[in-house]
Image (cartoon, rainbow, N blue to C red; front, side):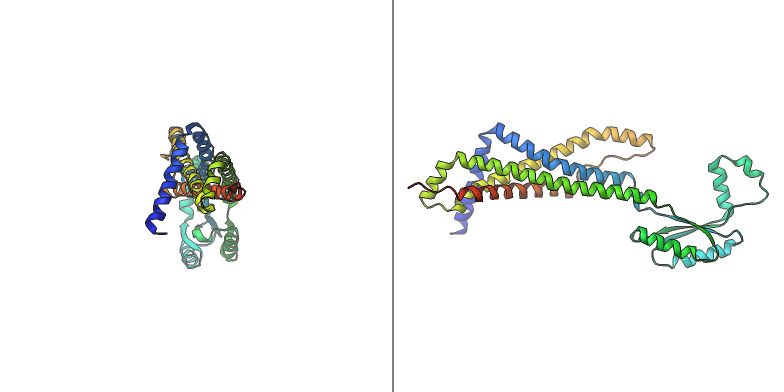
Length: 307
């Protein structure tokens, strides 16, 4: 078959499928609504995870460690220890907080300035504030780094509070799993909806299919318009899902901005990115085509011209 004829037949099948959908606007709209909601729900959950990470400023990876030195360790010795700590792999930044600076900060933020004036000497030690690298912030890496500093004879206490970090990252991990589970389950729903719709159309056009096969039409030729119908369902559902996501962001954005202002932030809700939209459209087209192919492949084999 010449390429021009092959392309023309595909265009004819596409236009024919589009025309059949347009002639049944109510049924088409209801099917697209179901597909659009099924595609929008996992995308919305994924968008929530993205906004949660952005709203927190990535603090889930902002782990730090306070290394309290012995009270007799001088500032000069603390600077030497900080230089040695910076050379260790996995350490991004080390800052020396002197005893005087620590007392000044405590006086400023604690509200016990008058009580501190009664002290004859500064009871605070020099402290090393250690920030691990982002790629070395797992629980095992942090425990290894904690043991490293605790082994120094000049160190009194190593304080590492990773519980809040682990909880936050665990919540994000659960949400990501929920996105995956929702995508799989709702994707199966899209396959079922498209497959059942194509099955009904095949049964409705049974006589036409028998005549087409009688004059020599192959299963591939008969199946082609149904595949384009499934593809159109997928594209239409993806367009509707994108509209739902944009509308949801538009409705929620003022409330989110107001809430952020109450916490002293100027955070604005992020809409679906190009990557999210590409995933929605790619998933919709693939599911629509696959659902139509499964249904057409199964039911067209049972339809043969009558003798």
